[in-house]
Length: 276
Image 1 (cartoon, one colour):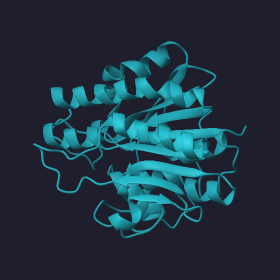
Image 2 (cartoon, rainbow, N blue to C red):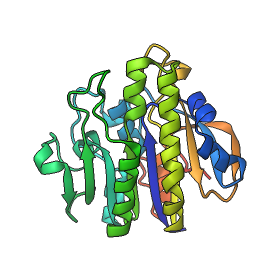
Image 3 (spheres, rainbow, N blue to C red):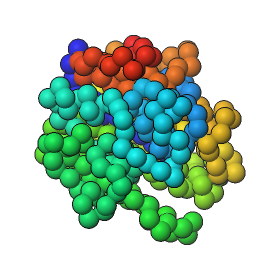
Image 4 (tube, helix red, strand yellow):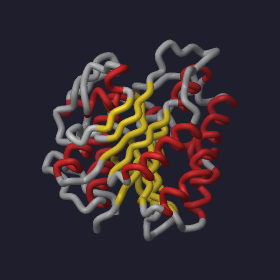
């Protein structure tokens, strides 16, 4: 098997919120065009540590990214590096933490916000920050704009691996809590944007994986060990066996699954089997 893969990370989208509000993704599951797993995140259930887990297949206690307060360059091996070493093209439309983890750290916006460099692990990157955001003004790019950028990356560069990361659910969740109309509406809006663009990506030959780094509590936090913080959904759009998987799987399986779909060998550090 050798193919092109898109990983969509919907930051802070908890499992129940996904199932209840992502009508498009759930419709694909119901129609047998996607398979959905319940997935348990690693600890701490924070963004930067889990971004690294999703791309190295190792837990934070092993890879060493401990919090969002300090984001050094990844020690790898990671999906971007393995793909580039194999001659694959990589791209990302994502929060700047991914630039710090896989390209250069610390982040320098005027140097790193847009990159097209074949020597970098993320060769074609378009990165954003949430600098200065407040509850009354979240300063976030719209999901439509993020999907447009991802689609343009596909048309211009045809990456073998593309990361698309949306931060808005997390920002709204911190501001209003997961048990709020604002959070639920934002989940739906992200799903609605995917409904507009996902068929373009699958039509271009991509296998599309959609998941979250962690969930969100009713009082607007994450980082701990509760089910609300740790349980997320994992959708595989284009899986030959659609529907709902019965088991709860580990987040450590994401990186080896991406590499398997690309026809690449997972390094020995990625000990969790790929999802089948």
